[in-house]
Image 1 (cartoon, rainbow, N blue to C red):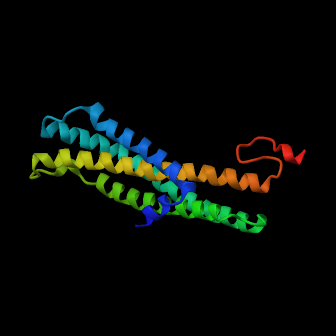
Image 2: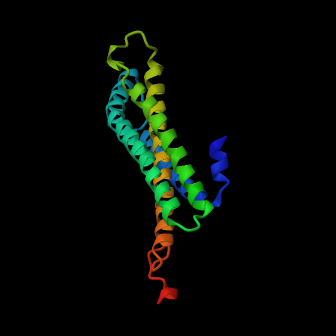
Length: 181
């Protein structure tokens, strides 16, 4: 699987693990904070609320991932045009960012499809279906968070690396390089 290959690279492993830890904690906290769902009517109300919020969330993640994908092309052009010897790590990071953005975009489309189901109109649905759908959407929101947070953290590392290579007076941490003085 492609994600496993990405995780094998040390340059992107730490941000991915951090991102998914944050996403799991947040998406796991939602059902815990909400508490146990006792009945079908309560599950239906929670599902309606999560669906409304997920429409905005899915749209935002979709927009962010498409924008990041477009900007990767700019970074790629900048890297190849201005860096004398671009390192392999930069390209591995860009590849990982692109992969996570594509996954986030596709998952956002599915979230928007799930969120557009007219839950109010369903009459002959088993009562457990609402609870199941609620947990699926909460899980899906967490998965989207993991993808987009991973992309952003790797993007930050990539930007720092490119800035350090293009600006000889600063290192990756943004500190003044003492060797240039």
